[in-house]
Image (cartoon, one colour):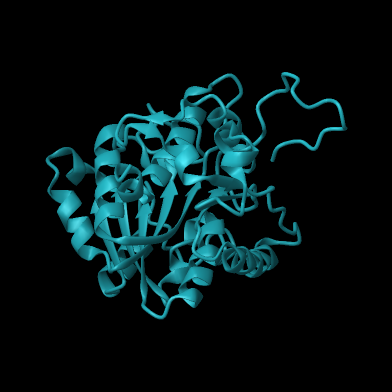
Length: 310
């Protein structure tokens, strides 16, 4: 948000606003914005490396130094879209279950206030996705498909004593939405049993994605008309994003992923999205910039038709 300055101090060279991409008041005004970012710096059930709580702040900080011009749409997309950044939503520390209940209620209120604006949540650990997906399912009569870009299936009934673990995020939504996991390369036997038995779950393995691009068609065919996109950044190969709690070798790369995302937004209605599980490492800035750029590209693809129309 742009700072409110005392009279007489406007016009001086203050730092960039702490909004996504450092957008000024005009480009980030809620009234005219077509997209809204909701930071949720929640972390409670992390099973290995910590730090996901710092992810939203790192994304916003890195984004302030990203160029606004996007060559794919040949314009400064952000100023055409209008992107409002909400303050970070702090959740209770009374436990995972009350925190997720609180988030579902809060997310519903935010989504209602946003109306037809595109809502993109910044996590935080992956458990925050479940309440958001369920809140979006409440808003749509048609069953949603969750497109999950991730290294892990996250289909465990519970993990380390809680059903609201980051490792159970997709299991929590199967009753209300189908889930298509892409980039998966780390699952338990329990998760394989569930996905074989459930018509609501399907997986695209990471090693399939290295052979050719046929996986894109298979993934798109599995998606219904309305899609919620959840992007766990451990989807990427750890050579690109080592800054995450449970990195897995053999992940996909940048440009083929963008090509797939562009098709998803062009061929399906993406109703909302989240990007989660960045756990920034001090002094290692490249992953923060990659994830910030990813968030920007998601918004560019969401509004690609409008932007291409001049």
